[in-house]
Length: 126
View (cartoon, rainbow, N blue to C red):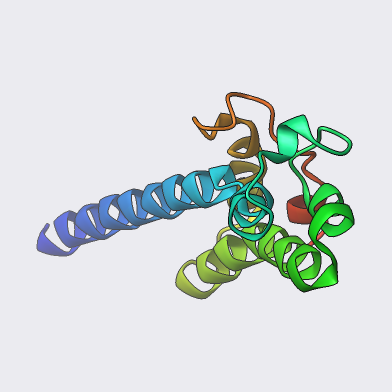
């Protein structure tokens, strides 16, 4: 009886921990690193200059490789870090849900107001 109760508690703790990893993945996916680096590097909103896309390619064209390449790597890390952490914490659970959380978080950063860049950097990193 006690063993079953402890097993139920263990499963619930794992479910809460996995939900926390999913939530963190979503929030990390929502951070527009290219847009933020564009504000820092060039001092402009990438949505209104160049191609109008707040992504790493537009930043690369405007600010050069010194800012564009780190932005691309940070965007790719959004799709690589959460599933790597999830795989380390939950080896028996597929990490595709965490990747989906990172990708679905892309268009929801409030300051970008739904005009996020495309998801391939996060999608193809894992």
